[in-house]
Image (cartoon, rainbow, N blue to C red; front, side, top):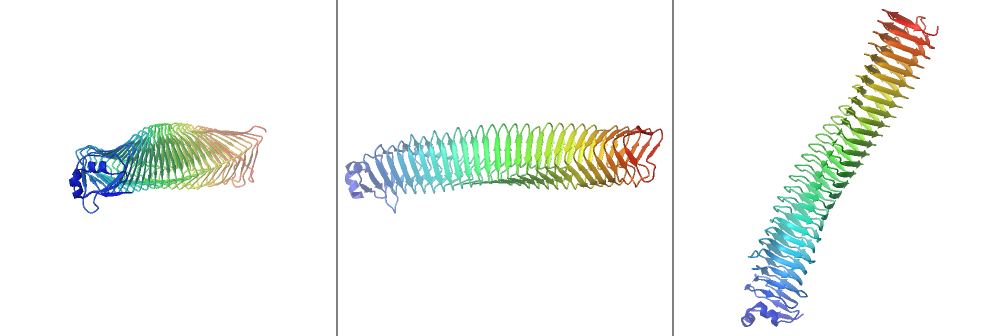
Length: 640
């Protein structure tokens, strides 16, 4: 390269920088004396134009770099009356763009720019406009107080590293198919969305986006943003908003926002991996209007409102994620939205763990939902499937299902919840398969609900283990209900129960209470109770077949108040008192059964207008007297 130095004496002869350029050869290095140059410059050849290193060299005027021209500007302060316009290639090193009379400092139109250690400030409208398939690189640059936007990229490519953007309306506006990458950049104190991505792609690594008065990142109209190891914090509005766009976030921290952490809407799609999303005044994550989100290996915690809020036909997948410490519901699913969770924890919330309503749908696999200050899961007019999960130590229910909801529970454990592990109210259908419910009231089923339990265990409750009431129906197959400190099962107020191939034993109070309801017991065992096996009253109807009933401390079957019981192929043995006691206009029909008792004088008693008919049945004890009746009651042996 040829070197041509321009000193004050030389300028006296040539008058202007423009004339010096015209007389220079391509590739010349022109060194300017430190002073103010008020002129416009049009480069017509490749060269280097440098200011003084130690003192300020100022150019005030229009600077044009046309196509096919490559210019390097070094150590210059540029305060243009118009804008710098680049159609060729420009390298800016240690340049300072001051505010002037123009709206834009620099426009790159189909050209290329590489800026290093430059400052852009006080433009009225924007610092840099990069349009029409231009390419730009900014390293170690500072953008501040540049009106509406620091950098506008339209249909262009931009790379930004180790730079700072502050005090404008927007830091970046990326539009019309542009591609912008930033790394280790500090974006802060913008009055609207700090980064706007519209119909373009944005990639960020290790940047900090904070203290904005608007959003941190706004992606919309088919925009696509990828952020990795980025930090978004202390923004006044939603930290990241995605509308009809895409977002991928990895190893990011999104915290301390005054609104939501991430909001996605209008068919947006978001993927988050290994992110921490926490401490927002509103919901940590909001998903609405047919949007989709995937969350893996994340921490979502300590929000002052809802943890994850989804509605309006949205879809969410959660995998190996912890959601904890929210003041409202940890996860809220509504309006036909679908959520699936696997290997995740929902814990330590101040309200409900998961709330599902208005035709929402939630599937949970191998999760733990614990230590919430209300129910672990609440659903209303919705559907829930939960597999291989643990629900424990919640202040409310394990599951509270209401109003035409459907629930499937498979291979789960419920224990140490302060209210019934599972409560259903008003037309709920629930299936419980191969699950354990213990250390707490197991089931409370009320108001026209339908329950099916298969291969389950219910045990060690301080209260009634299972309560079925108010026109509800329940079916238990191959279940065990045992070791309760109160009643085993209550069937109340015109409800029905079918117990098949099951065992009911070792309760402090009656193993089963039937009040104004109907029960069928088949191929089941009731034994080792501290009171009755069956306490039947108030117009109830009970059919017992192929069952074994033994070792109860009080009457094994107590039948009262116009109730009806039929026993077929039943064995009653070893009761401490009478095996069958019927009173107050009750009726009992016994066939093909065995009733043996060596501890009580009477096996069968009928009092107060009650009737008992016995056929093909062995009734015996060591005392000889097996029947007792009084007060217009009768016991009739039909086959004698």
